[in-house]
Length: 238
Ligand SMILES: O=C(O)CCC(=O)C(=O)O
Ligand SMILES: [Fe+2]
Image 1 (cartoon, rainbow, N blue to C red):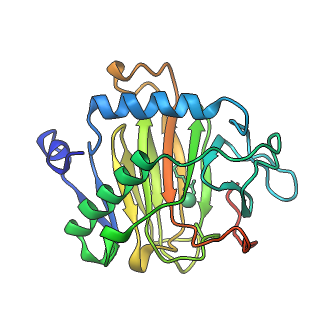
Image 2: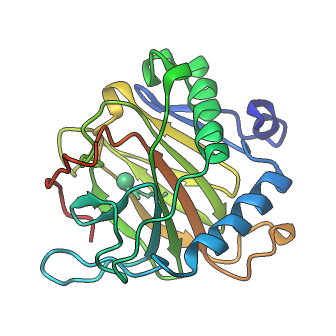
């Protein structure tokens, strides 16, 4: 975890919007490999990788697997009901710890990210796998009953990530290129900002990562949910 490393390679941290921070090169090569290896394991069944579908059956343009809580448009559950009904895999403590450290690093760059990052305790992760032509439409992350920030880690090919504002899908927005190893955290006034993945940039993964193609993202959140209360709200992501 390195706030300085990105800067050494000419990409300093950026406050993309109030409470939204990009830390380039936050994961070094070994940590990226470790996380990618873990993602490959999580992708296998039970409760493994699948292409999520909108409530009307329209498939999304990527595949995903969940940890802690299973997310499918637009609700969280403890079982992967749109996969095989198996219990969702646990979110490992080490990954929650990485996310907490990431929120702390981001909060030092912009205090609006999170006021009490030491208490950040994500209980859900979504791992997205993007092929060359995949994307994710502009959406809000709003199935959480909680204002804690969202933490995203990128692996593999770069992508064009569009970050807007909470008021709607339209402009203004900023397009930022997320590289393998980058940390992006959005909280505070940007917690409900619309965002999406416009496109991946094939062939841009670091060769030493050992990924043949595509982009993987790991997105962590505090759901604020208990097993008795799940939520059904949301906006289109297709
Ligand atoms: O893949 C990404 O970088 C974004 C993922 C995302 O926005 C989500 O899963 O809600
Ligand atoms: Fe999102």
